[in-house]
Image (cartoon, rainbow, N blue to C red):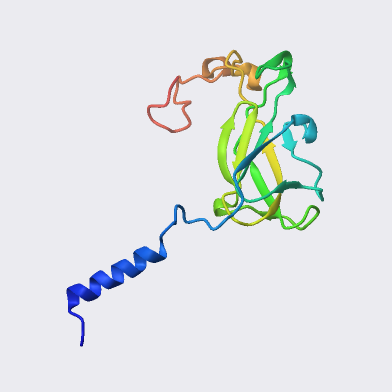
Length: 183
């Protein structure tokens, strides 16, 4: 005997719900989330660039559900989050995040949720592996070079001269044929 349309819909709904019983997330990862912090001493500074290690590896183990925090302050007070007075603050630009499938493997740029950028602030970058895959990570971050607000245009390499100092005169049509040109 065929089932009525409403009864078919009800049976299909119950079957689908029973398949999802106990489902609390879309992830099938069985690894609990964890966090790891890397000191600036674990990496390499070259000029205004921080690298989490040498190119070629070994790279940093980056298992599923791990949040990896890079502490980029060169010098910390013991037990404090503050840089030492002579420490160098690091204002990072968005980092380059590279992944490999082994500690010394070939690198490829990270994409999608392989490494979510969770924190980008002074002296700190945090990334999270939001996949079920195991990677090794290499992070490269450049320091933002901020202009000194007290610097003037002449200090930045300009001559500091104005149009009136250049010896040009707008008397007698010396505007080069551009009407209305003047100081």
